[in-house]
Length: 192
Image (cartoon, rainbow, N blue to C red):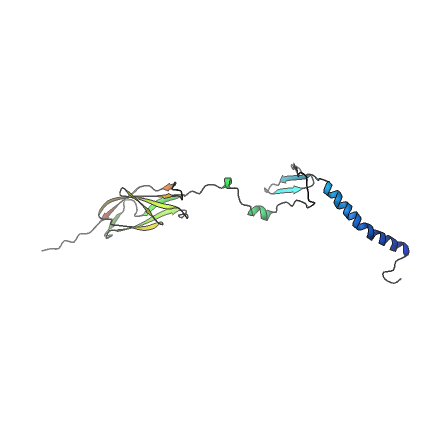
C-alpha cells in the first residue's frame, strides 16, 4: 500500500478526528474557565513556601477567589525568595557601635605642636552619608567634616575634647567619652 493511503474506514476515522479535535479543545478550555480548583499553601522545614493544587500535610487552603485566567499560579523559587526585599518595618534602624577620640589619647601629653592639633576619631561603622560630627573642645562646639581633622590655635595647657555623631535630621546617634589631654611647649633660654 503506498504511503499516505489507508483503508477507507481508517481514512474516515482520521478525517472525523481532525474535525472534532478543535471542538474538543475549545470545550475543554470553556469548561476549565468555569471550574475553580482548590489551592494549598505550606512552608517546608527550610522555610520555603510552596503552593499546590493538591492537599499536603500541614497545608492551608488558599481562597483564590473568582479566576479570570486559566494560568496556573507559580510557586516562588528559592532564588526569588532569597532576593526578596525585607519590609521596611522589618529593617532595624541604623546604629553606630562605638565612637572614641583616638588621637589625642586620653591623658596624653603632646609636645611642640605649634598650635595645630591633629584629631582622629575611631568610629565604627564609618560615618554614614548625611551624618555629621559635632565636636566639643574646651567648652565650645563646632561642626567638623570626617573622622580626621585639625584644630588651629591649640596652645600649652590642659584641654578637653568630646565628639558626637548626628544624623541628617540632627538627632544624636552616638557620643564619645570626654577626653582630657595636655599640650607642652619647650622653652629656649637665651643666655645674656
